[in-house]
Image (spheres, one colour):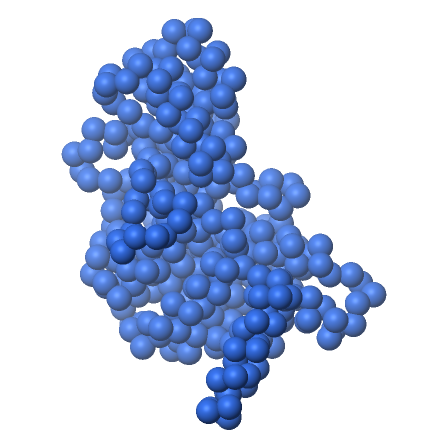
Length: 362
């Protein structure tokens, strides 16, 4: 999102609409090919803004925002394109923000495909129906300039390139939340020696990752809740949860068999297990009591990341303080997952202390 991008304003109001609707915004999401059968990574297209929303039963619902300031394509053709991308990426709804007003027939036809055609003005009016103050700058994430500041944190620390990819591209489009969680743990273990708690850019990257992980756990905790039964013994729930996090019983047993064969040459290898398993069980135990609060933690952690990158704002801090005071689970869950990541990934303990201090400072 460069300073001179023509669709910069449209992307910003799309981000602010996400925030007004309680969605987590993900701008400029890269869409990969369905299969990776070539030597280089193939990017099919990018989504200007993707909003991820938590619905009552724990499902994550995606909304696509397509921003266009040129007239290279008619409004209905833009709707056909958005509908195709929406289907490919598993989105549930789409907005196309166009330069010129679409004729009524095109708008109604687009709606039949799940695409809502708008101009800047009509989209702003729609936002005001959600929040009368729309499109005011109401959160750290609401400004493109602040998104660019966070981007600079990644550009200064190229070791975090894969974490950036997970945070910006993989998480918002993922349907395999357990698998992506394992990727996060593996990647953080890989770069654990790079995190320096004294550097604000490193703190920003960790908090940004924490926010994206909370999006994953919004779904993971929903599934864990459905796997859990009050009459279950602890050992029984552990077994079911272990199978779930490893992609099923068969997948886990195959990995275990491979580990056993490897252990012949290296007896020090133990059974297949996620690191710091006891701490992960403890975290799952607390989120089972209020899985609906996980998604609020995602927004809170992301806001803290932007705050570190851009500096504090009194108005935004008051809102974060209000949210964390009204829902004590935000602090509890955020510190719980931080504690797990520090232990499981071998991150500096001072990093965990810095994050927890920041969480409780608000």
